[in-house]
Length: 259
Ligand SMILES: [Zn+2]
Image 1: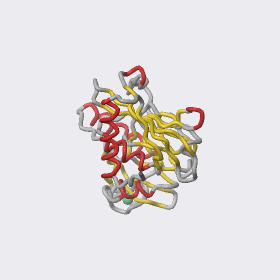
Image 2 (image 1 turned 60 degrees about the vertical axis):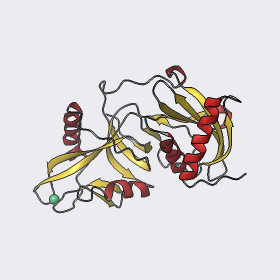
Image 3 (image 1 turned 180 degrees about the vertical axis):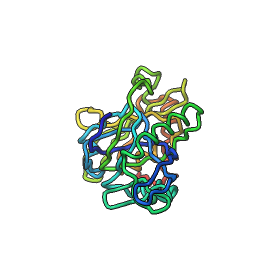
Image 4 (image 1 turned 90 degrees about the vertical axis):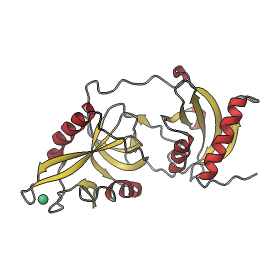
């Protein structure tokens, strides 16, 4: 088990039901745990989404992990988690906590760890896990990683039949510069995005099973401004088509285009 404070960026997470005895009121309570998936990324604790995007590369988690604490910058966590699962979670001073449905006392990690892992494995075996799918960022998390062959690492994008379609110059809110690359696999009908900082250093690499809307939502979620869009191959109809689809997805997401 690995536990230390980090930042987390994920759009793969599962809410699993648990039932434990609350130490506060003594009653048996239903609550829930949050498990993040192998496609999640971690970075140093207190990663600053405004200025660190092109400075500090993300590490893929490559394992499942139970969220023991979610704190720091968490606006979107409150919106996605607490409002939907309000009897199971609450925001407290040091972040998001699983709570007792009767007395609202927080349920410590040591109490929910085994129950959440059991529930996750049981639901997984019956194929009842549903990825919540929304991307969230937290600048201060503690995760307990599960080991033991739960995931086989996917090969790199270049080796996986992906072609580079578009390159977008991008800026973060503090003026840091980098490039967002858009890749596509015809075989998988799947897009992937690679974000690079100075000297082509890779900061973040994500595969998507969804469509371009998801790519756009994630770029928006990172607060990046796209300054220039280029085709990976001039005069390729495939790249031009991708550009048109990408531009219309951007405009539906509220991006405005300067001519
Ligand atoms: Zn209680």
